[in-house]
Length: 152
Image 1 (cartoon, rainbow, N blue to C red):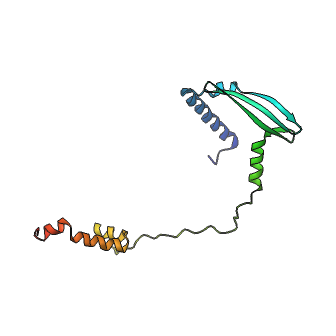
Image 2: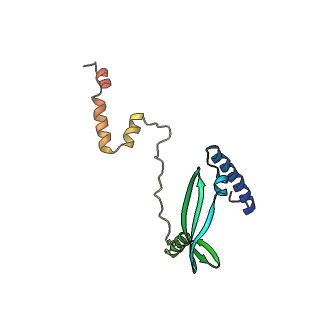
Image 3: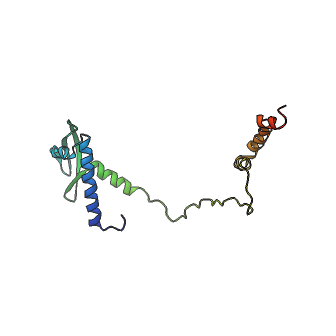
């Protein structure tokens, strides 16, 4: 995806958007019908601010919302969107001069060639020392140990 040109990317996005529209229509969400129903009416305007009433039909339900607008460079934008962008630009940038914290490197356990640990040794190695000692004392009192000692 990163190697595609802008026009190639837009072609792919168009195909994906068309597929999404068709998929949503199968479930009763007709985006074309919803977009055809959109109406925007100016409710009030004062200088570089305005309130626009936007209405549309979504899943056969009428939806109406008042949107605060602001004029910037001769164009109208959502006041909330402009505020959000300005707030994010006003935040201090993340300090990238500090080196990233290095994660501790984990090396695999080393074993002598040809030596294999038994399953009980592997389990003990994975446990803290206190649990490993409890495990080995439990093994001595298990029924299998009693059976090997004559069942006594």
